[in-house]
Image 1 (tube, helix red, strand yellow):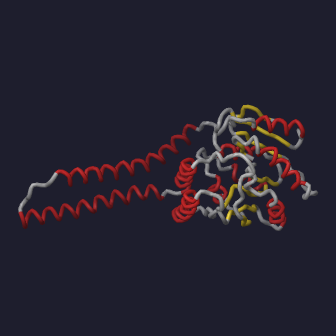
Image 2 (cartoon, helix red, strand yellow):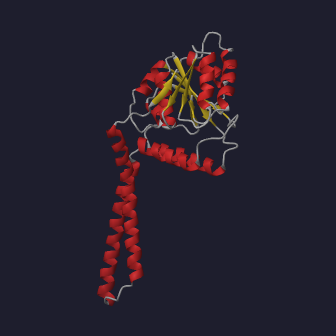
Image 3 (cartoon, helix red, strand yellow):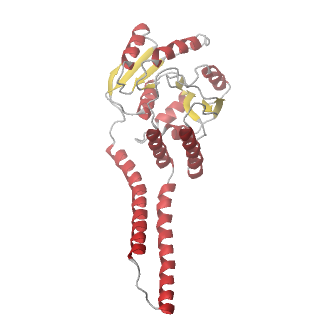
Length: 301
């Protein structure tokens, strides 16, 4: 469970999960909380739960905020169970679905994941961009990413090991879950509001995360740069032919500077746009080559 400023939700989550655990007499749940550099008392709540249940409740805290992807990776690397679930502690991932997920695993599926089919309570602009993100990335990427799929899923040890074998620095878990394959069953559910506290995701943070996902699992933006350059060259040829014909038929009138400035600005903007696309990929390569650790653990229990 990756956590960032979740002091109110951690104890509620644990109490709810213990009720679910009581309904699974043949299984024991071990908890791995990952504190992603929280600024509130999230770590104190984790320490308290660990003190009360030292054999089943574990936590690790980062030296600073490294992001949810790093927290997910740290949790998966720490978890040692035969089955591993990824969840949020705000209870927007309904814990009771774990019972259905467990039945799916016992039926032979390698992974059972939750898929949100409604976005009630979510800002309309966020819902709009989320829907278009899934439409776009599934058009330009060979890796399937199911619309509305959550990180909330129950996986066998084989699936977890496959995910951990993907050691790229710029991680996009939704894409990695799809890329490793395996037999995955999706359980649909309607959106659930947070049980307490406020989300740490802003609109711009989600937009940047989406762009990282597109760059990580598609080379199509690089093709856009090439096609934009070709289109600009083709249009310039048409205008050149038009100017030559006009000069031959009507002489060479004095051109106006506004049109020239507009053309220069347009071409310059296209060049910067294409450079920006290429620069995004080069930036990701730069981060990969530096090979810095994806997170630094300050405390672990």
